[in-house]
Length: 102
Image (cartoon, rainbow, N blue to C red):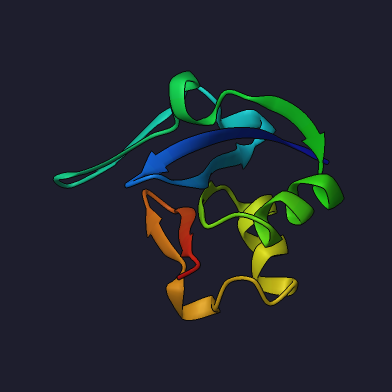
């Protein structure tokens, strides 16, 4: 299984931080709604390279800010101990998680 991974370098007060969007292959370009909540898996933030899961996990491990969407990638982040299961949220049944390293 592969996932889309987009890596962006963001300058925060002179400090470069790696911000990453990743999503399951079949979710790119989709929008999920639940009540007033909207989860937009857009090309601008998530539309990077299509990578194997092990490559995506390495990038997540070495990044300061990761937003991940989808059963496959979120499940692997939890399995690898990078995300706590209670940190996983869902909109319209689709899991997502935000990882921050401080």
